[in-house]
Length: 64
Image (cartoon, rainbow, N blue to C red; front, side):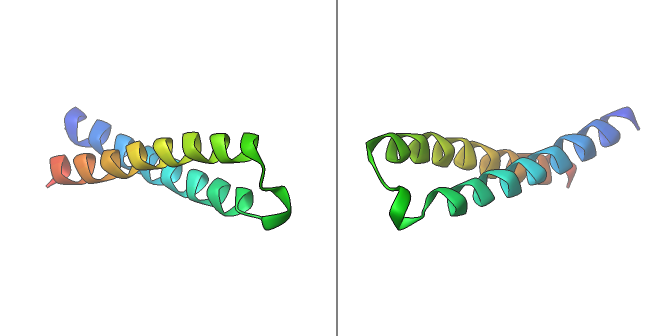
């Protein structure tokens, strides 16, 4: 019972993290803001987005 609750919590947290970082990517992809610093920040945001996507998949499979 506790394991199911913890997996549910982790899954929802991963989904919310995914939504936040996809919104951050959309906000950073403005053509008037593009410079070297923004591209580096975008790479970092993309890396975290990838980790969150893997976490969503892993926790979803673990819940099954």
